[in-house]
Structures are given as structure tokens and as C-alpha cells.
Image 1 (tube, one colour):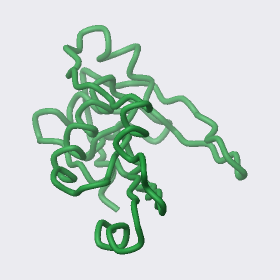
Image 2 (cartoon, one colour):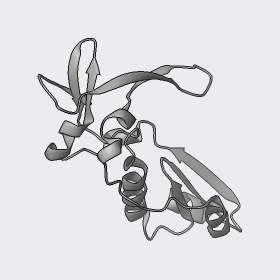
Image 3 (cartoon, rainbow, N blue to C red):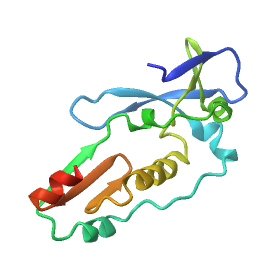
Image 4 (tube, one colour):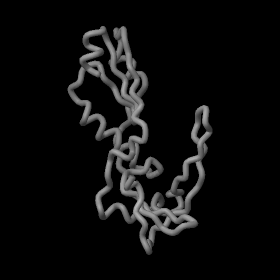
Length: 146
């Protein structure tokens, strides 16, 4: 799928940790423990996440809502070549670099929210919080926004 690329060497090899995903299945996801490698030296991108009160206020008066959960949203944002070296994980099968943004990186939520705000700019009655998009009003506007 192009998510990872095998590499022979990296000065930023990050250990992996299993993270149990919330929900019915309790699936485990393998994630890089970036807090022990790049987080101490990272100048994290700052961009505000919307407050839930602001989201509710902008959607007030809505009658119909849809929540769109962008599954595996991070796979939509490809990293530039010079940044990929910082996203190397160390596994029992060797070293691999992520080719896409990883939500375990401190800057990832801010980068993603900024990109989504830019994409959805100008669509009335639509709000986004990370990988969830909510839209609504009356039937006509709701369907047009979708």
C-alpha cells in the first residue's frame, strides 16, 4: 500500500509500541514511540484545534447532520522526502520509514487540522475536528454540503 518503505539505516530509528484501539474489536495498532526520539528536539507546528463550543455554535439551527469519519486519514497526507527520515520505526524485521503523516508525531494534529480547514473553507454549515467532518442544516443544504 506504500505506507512504509524499508531502509537500511537511520539515525532516528524509533521503537514500536502496540496501542489498543478503542471500540468493539480491540484491535492493536503498531505505532512508533516518537516521544523517545524526535519529540524532544521537534519544533512542533502550532495550529488551534476548534473548541467544541465553537463547533456547536456554528452548527446551531441545523436540523440534519452527518458525521463523516475519515478512516485512515493520515494516509492522505504524504510526507516530503526530507521529513521521512525522522519517521523511521525499528521492528523485528528491520527499519521502515513512514511515507505519510503519522498521528503519533506531535505536529500531526495541527498539520492535519490546518489542511482540513483549508479544504473545507467556504462550505457553509460544515465543521471539522481532525478526521471527523460534521455538516447539517435543512435537507437541501445538508445534501448540497455533502
